[in-house]
Image (tube, rainbow, N blue to C red; front, side):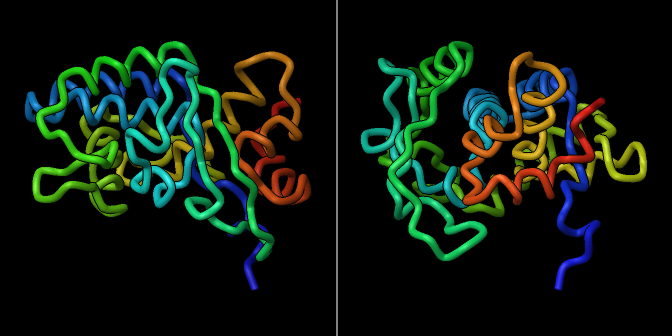
Length: 203
């Protein structure tokens, strides 16, 4: 059984920290990977995708930049927190994310079905995405927020960006409720959202 602490978001970032990570990854990455890594971090932070969902995306099947959405069929999504089959979902992208993705796709060094190719293969793995995100945090020198104060850059993972979506919606952007966070992150119940994020909602 998970403890109360384990059930809560334990590491999250503020928007300015994510901006620093994006700048750092562009500066630190090989030139042909810079746009991919920037777009990857921007997409994770905009959408709240789980890392396994992110690596499964295909350009033709799941990316519609004209409508500004990512399409997530049920078979790409994790059944969470129950075994209910999730429904087809379209996630609206911010205008800035659409522009970043357009720039990335216009200059990709490798033309693959997968949205995120790697140097070694046609599709990044979940581990390679984690490596990109953590390396960007280390290069930027960010100190993430944690349950016990400031943390270390090495603690930042793709799931940290998912938690950071909730922080942004509850504390930076106006007019969002836990129901909005639940819908964005696609939790099966509002109770899950409240349990994981009630401590990062300022009062």
